[in-house]
Amino acid sequence: MAQGQATKVKKKKKSVLKRAAQAQQRAEVNRANRTRVRTMMRRLRTAITAGDATAASNLLSPTMSAIDQAITKGVLHENTGNRYKSRLTVAFNGIKAKAAAK
Image 1 (tube, rainbow, N blue to C red):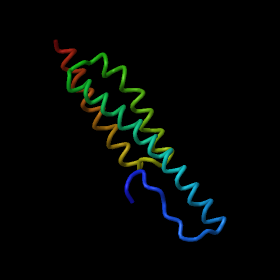
Image 2: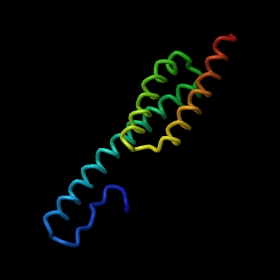
Image 3: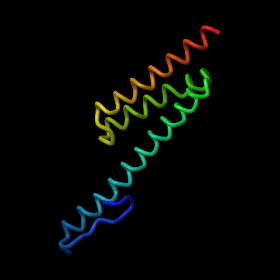
Image 4: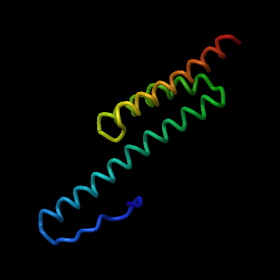
């Protein structure tokens, strides 16, 4: 189903209407959580690619926390979130090593 499209309700039964409303609310919450995580990951990646170790270190902890929250809420699968965290940490450690070498 396309993003932002309402779910089609074929029956006008009370329980069907309620479930459709609940699904729509859940989709909005999930979309907000997913957007927050992706934005934080994008900010961290830009800081890493720019070589800004201090900005990256300030963003690392909140980003990891946001990924963990998304896993807990069921927005991200656990393996997917762990893969994101691992790759971001490896990139951050590379930047940190370069900054320490200078």
